Length: 351
Image (tube, rainbow, N blue to C red; front, side, top):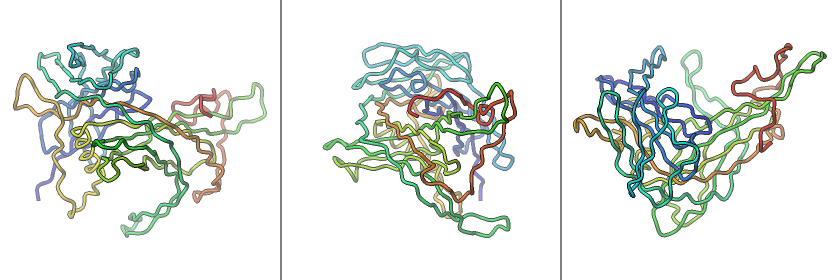
């Protein structure tokens, strides 16, 4: 049986931080291909309105070594159906973003134009930016999860864990086909211990976890058109009895964008057994103007966005199965900020 090659595809994390998340997609190709992941929304937010450019590189599944080669020095522009163009500003690691004061407009079509430093040109099929219905609310349930895993001896055993399952609820507009994607970002509170000394170091901190959804979460309204829909978005860990602020974003998709993300989600969810169907070919909406035979990976989308959050007091459900939580000891002059990345001792909004 011929082994499929895995490639690293760099997809922009649609989150509050401008990170770039490596995700493996099976292409079966041996030569590098241009990978594009981009979005324009109806919000003036450069963390959302951005484009990532990179070259696909082999992913070594055995050594878990990932190489990413960003595309630098490209000319990137977003154009609408009225002929207006917005040139993107180059940031770090092949990420290009709209200035903070610019945003898309519902009802307009947008397309992406790219010119590489060597002169090759690429474009996307126009995408309609549709408004996103407001979410009714974001809620959660504390629950146990049981999954089958392999133990150290290679035997299949049941493993039980706990977590906070977070849901988004919306009232779907009736009469038209609607498609959605969700993601979530998180900020969690944590503590440390310190000796009795002056000055007293900070022992209460908050860490900005960035995007906490590990998979693409999508839905079409074929089964709930015109009705309320409750969608599971993410499961948060039950590890510390502290507060956790999660913010859920909902994106309105076109039918073509939904199909792309649906197949992407399907490939992410594959367990890789011999009984799985072969990975579906994920077709994006980008093409080469310079060489029609060249294949481009990825998608440039346009989405209306709505957002809501919920503050979870995890202490209400403690103690957890993982055992009692004991804040770690931190020796001055350090404080609790050294324990987790992207941390602050200033209480963030929402807590």
